[in-house]
Length: 116
Image (cartoon, rainbow, N blue to C red):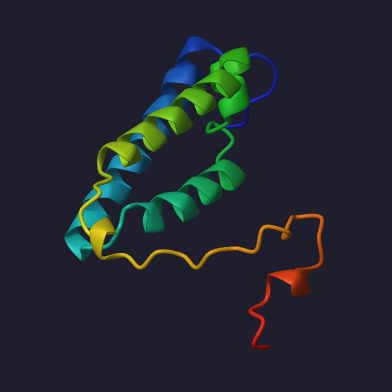
């Protein structure tokens, strides 16, 4: 299905159906193989974007595409943040003190231990 010019409503629906169907299939296969879904979603998405002309997010979503990507990244980061816990941090070893004259603009050798 070659897409040129503005997309019709049926082409948009077909593109969205392909995207959702591919994503669901990757999720099911990943669950059955007991691997993280992202391992299948990334290559499948890259392949679909390169090989299938109906899967063109710029034409499907238009000007809404960049804000949708930003919103999706924000939701993913928020969801990942909800899973964070402080359990285990009490067992973590504190970092060694830094020399007060070490700066990002300073030489790297000033931050090495004096015994070196």
